Amino acid sequence: MTFLTSIAENGVLLDVFKAFPAAARPLIMYHEVVMRGPSPLTVAERELIAAYVSGLNACTYCHGIHTITAQTFGVPEQLVQALLQDLETALVEEKLRPLLRIVRRLTALPSRLVQADIDTVRDAGWNDAALHDAVAVCALFNFMNRYVEGLGLSADEGYFQVAGHRIHDVGYAGLLRLLPQSEG
Image (tube, rainbow, N blue to C red; front, side):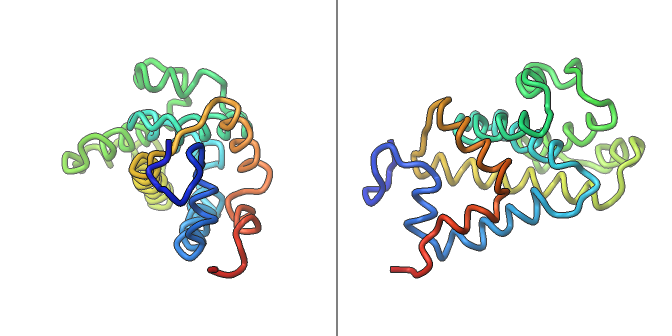
């Protein structure tokens, strides 16, 4: 149940975006840049990070949608859950594991990130752009998890499927077409 009285009780994030398009437009465009722009990380890897961060934060809404989105880009169905259970034993590409450790640390204990953490990313062969992009996805979804939870948004598996496939099909920028053209 949403905490916003101007949004239907079963409202979803798209309803919030429609109600507040001035704030939604730059946020959606930032999603497009971070999640779909040029990057050493694939779209699947970025969606995996989004789902992982959301799972770490227990944000069922974002976790559900981005797990489905990651799957539509080829991430194995149970991988996100396996990462949440044990990052060190999950069957993930070994090169990705150091980035996921950074994401976990930034989500749980950001002030404890140290150079040695970054060194493991470098040792795995990642460059500054990859580090930046992983941190940007992590930061964006820590923000989005708090935004969604703070507004009291929730959805079910059916909506996760619809939203996850919509993001796959139209990207984030495609959501802009669903917003009103004027503010009122």
